[in-house]
Image (cartoon, rainbow, N blue to C red; front, side):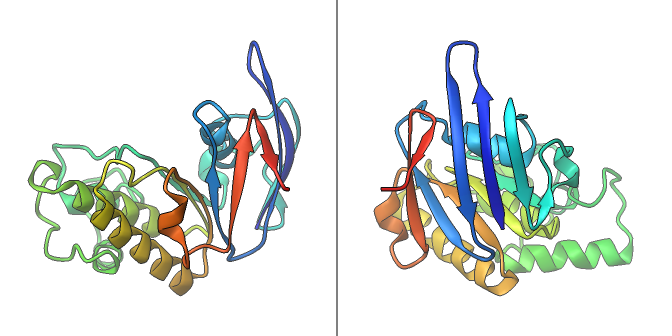
Length: 210
């Protein structure tokens, strides 16, 4: 569940976000560049703090919680993989910064990789992967955090339509299996038909509900 009513101030503008997303609901967020889509996700994730108001996540007040304490995982457009690390090591960063994994951690990484069909790529490095495979690694890392809220900031915009469709289908499947609440920023809302519950339009720092 995501519930917030906050004001977020920039030096020359102010945004007011009023949003309620029910548990396990899948919502797409659209709007022109500069309307505040990424700012909204950053507020929910804890990378930005509101000037006024409160942010409630899964029934608890997380207005000023540190990002790692929030029940949230976020997937960005840039996959943020470390090129010198293997797929296995990149995924494992959700669990530990140590290069050596214990048996339980190794099993968790393998399960996350299997969920996104990367179980045969664990020893490869990002330079050996396609764009879609890199985003699967980033998604596996999110899943391994095992948080009930998944935020996605245009993670597949650089992929071709067929790959985007494939990744959206995977996201839809994983959200259903893990009973996740999802908020997805996108510029391709028509490609999401049948995979989301509703679409919200953000304009000039406000969500239109009409």
